[in-house]
Image (cartoon, one colour):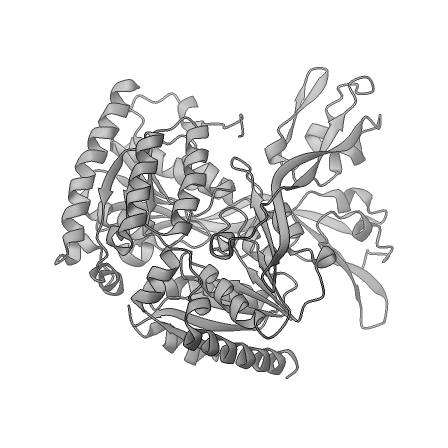
Length: 287
Length: 318
């Protein structure tokens, strides 16, 4: 089962929940944790894997054969993303804008455009204790994170796992949607505040539009008001876990410590939560 | 780093001076960008506000804007297949690089291709390969943007559709509209609430900025993310100031941030205490400056004095 941990708003505790839940579950089952917040990955700060992210992640970019190119400019005109500029004699590529769609190669009448690789990020994967961990990291200055997210999520090279937990980037734009795509259940983490509620509503809409069943985790319970609970009640969205606003948890997080690894009560609460989650996901998946 | 950053405003011949742009970033989400921008909005007169966190904009929740105008954000293309014309050959499906096309079946059992609008990036390859002219390319509406009046001055903000492409373009649009509005009004400052992360919307937010304020907090995650955001800002050759929010949450890590910033030459312009009054203000639909009763309000006032002098220096250098 693939569970994505998402939220509209940043800083609500996605990574905290992801590493704690994965750690608590890994004691009893084979679990994978995939950090798909590739712009700002943080899971490794908690898990402290012995391996770095070093495997290159590349995207395809056009390579124009200068001998064959007649400078007709068809490729530049066909590029919706304005990644090719028609210059006299030869097109100029702006690689950050390229979406690797292949239109330029398709339209070139001289077959002068082939495709080459460009590195935009790195990937790391391996075992951390009894947990399988995989994380992607976008290079600073790169604009498009979705290709890195795609390979971080790609299970082809991962071992067989009972549960896969995916830490998503914040927001509801293409990086978050790419991360949520193909998952079985979305855990939406929020805070009981107006910002938390507003962005939760966006996240719920996203999950619904994508046909992914979802449940809510309210973090730092007690800091704000009850409007998140009211919203979930009115919309029939299950609130699966409420984590209290506990300074001990906040401090453990600030140091990059997995609270579930040092506090057995919290770990067993998370395991109970995970079995509720499985039951809930199965119920909504097969009504 | 992109070397091609069209700066529309500088191309405009305009008698009025170009306003300074202060962009608030963080790398990590949830460090307090929007709460801080709302407080600065209450404190600073003569500015235009721009919310560039276009996929989860929250500034309006505090500012309660009265919408003056609402415009669609149309950018790029969106492909659609007319089922009646589709032969079901699935050539487009084979060629699509974004897995956006799947084969559906009509009531009569005939198969035809369908495009998932969330996955479609609008490249148009399907329309080119289709032998039966079944693919239509339309201008894509990917969200909307607004100009509003608030009790703290004008606000330009936006709402990106779910899974929206081109968030960077919407950010650029919001920022440029805010700059244009400030010029029209003869106002010298645009205060930008930026998005989290370091990708396309962040790059679009810092393009053309005069000063970047990074809000961080003393946690290992926030420090890690600050370093990456700072690297991006430095790549643009922009001055960066740092604010440590909730500085007393972990004094040891706050100390590490001070050392790191000293090493890298980023001035720390303010340190804000952890105070639950900040969230209570948000619940009341106010900024912490309006709510009062918190040391954080005084700390933000002090921080603004330093930011103001940094902005003046930028002005002199221009």
